[in-house]
Amino acid sequence: MKILITDTGSGFGHALAMEFLENGASVYGISRRSNSYLKKYKHYHHLTHDLINHQELNVQLKNFLARVKTLDLVILNAGILFGINDIRKTSIEDIVTVMNVNLLANKVIIDTLLETVSHVYQIVAISSGSAIKGSRGWNAFALSKAALNTLIKLYAREIPETHFSALEPGIVDTDLHETTRRLTEEDIYPVARELKRNGMNSNGNLSDQNYAANYLVEAMGIILQEESGTYRDVRDILLTPELVS
Image (cartoon, rainbow, N blue to C red; front, side, top):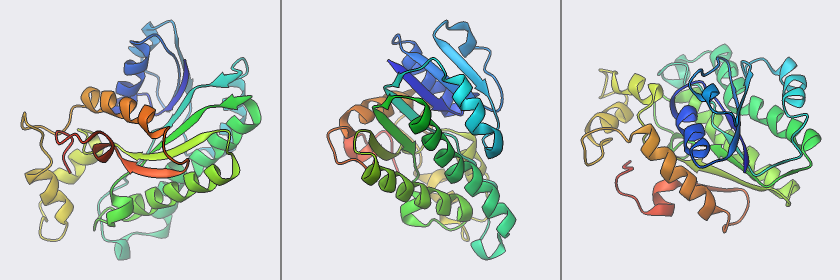
């Protein structure tokens, strides 16, 4: 298998890359910083690029994948939160920054792949429950993920030979959720209270990244049986109470 994953520099992207590398796949990773641990694997290939820079992304990605004829799976994992605040206090500049990474960089990547690679079998965008719930405080992030869900649906209508989906991975122990959990204004931002009180698995911790990556990979196989363009929560697909909401 040949798999492209964005934001493999650390965190959840690293865990996803490891999941596939350990099972013999060739992984093409993109992130703004390299990952020395993943580079130990001979089937890992890395492109160092900050996804906020769209101007050079098309050219660099084409060069990076010049010898790749097909991709079995693309995981659009990269995303930024850029602070917790009310939408009325969030500047247009901050919203544009988040949209550039969480939405528009993914469009550049998909368009480039369609130009460069003969066939892409499956594209999965990592979404968020905030896109559906509109959780207070997640402002630009929620907007970007809602738009990402729609972007995936639009591509699904245009490119029937590729299966598109948006997957919510559940509450994973990432820097994004750690930022939210540190908030003291629980009365203002209920999502912080939810993460502190309910965002725990049976071991008393947020879902481990490696654990969540394993379940996400399983869900990616199952969602292929559903209509292209679908948004789903991994917890609903696999009925896994451990990945609590």
